[in-house]
Length: 183
Image (tube, rainbow, N blue to C red; front, side, top):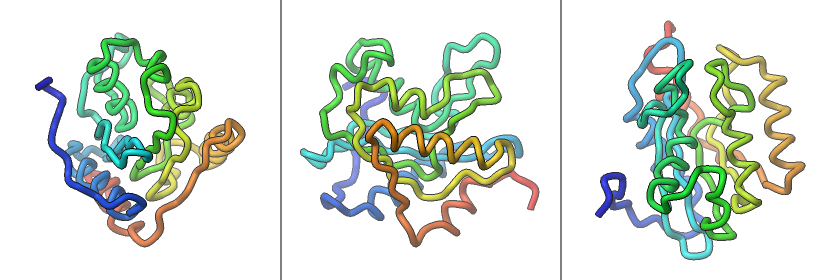
C-alpha cells in the first residue's frame, strides 16, 4: 500500500451531501491560519462510485521554489494521483476515469497569489475527465475579488464542466474554511 492510500467511507452513489461531508472532514485537517482557507476535496469515479483521491489545503508540499508548500485541496488530490500513476499532473487526464467528479468545500481558485497554477487551470488540463465540480461555498472575498471567481466558474462551464452547488452546509463549511481568521 502506498503512503497516500487510505480507506474511505462507503457513500451512496449520488449522495452529494455525503461526499461534501467527507470533503468537509478533509478540510478539518488543514491547519488554521489568517491568510488562507481550510478547504477539503474528494475526487470520485462517478461510474464506479469509487473515491479516487482526497486532499486538504497545505496537506502536501509542492515544488514552487518561490512559495513552497501552499498546496490547495484539489491540487493535493492531483498530486496523490500523479504519484500513484507515476505521471506528471498534466497527464492525469490519460488515466482518470471519463466520468470523474470533484467535490470541493470551496469553489476552485481561478487566481493564485502565490504564483502556483490555479485549480481551475489544473482541472481544465485534465482532458475533460472531470465532468462535474460540486462546490460547498463560493470563495469569500477575503483575498481574491469575486469577479475573478465568477470568471473561473464560467471557464469551467465553457469547457463543458458542470458546476453545481451542494446546498445546506454553507454555515458549517464557512466556519471550517475560515478557521484562524479574525472574526
